[in-house]
Length: 198
Image (cartoon, rainbow, N blue to C red; front, side, top):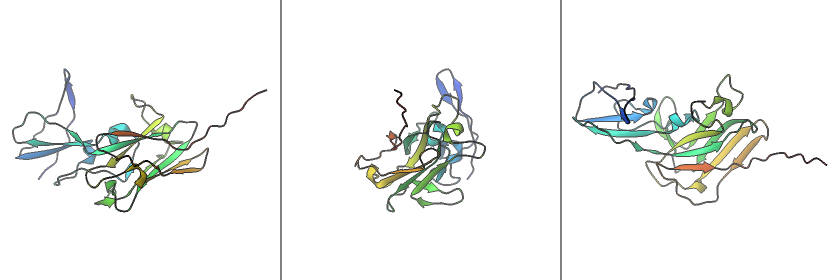
């Protein structure tokens, strides 16, 4: 019947949180922005930041009087290369109509088959938007919901808008099953101009 945002702190090698909430079962979600108040589940947004800290979505059900929690990853994470030399402006992931990959569009919950990451205002491209706090700025991360029906790589289409090569699109031919808790590299068909001198 209530929500609370908790800050994780380290005590030795143990990550800890404290809460004033009580009940027979608590649901904890990470990151906090992915929590759905008064519902059993988490938000997997249709609009994402590309930052690993936002794509690493997990939850834990905590029994009454429990003193520990095991978080389970609910998503697969897709990695895209967004080096400054390419100038990636946006990434769009689309799944087949019968496979939803997100469940929250910013205002309502539902079943959605498109996720986008766009360059925020004030940045030239996604490279500029990635954090400097340990994440490789050349890599963008996208969370894909993996809690329901099977999802295979060849049911996804990737579209990257770039300032150097226009819009690049790829649909994988692989039948690899996309599993929650796994990270997958997405190889886009970028090219590099090479000048050979005499």
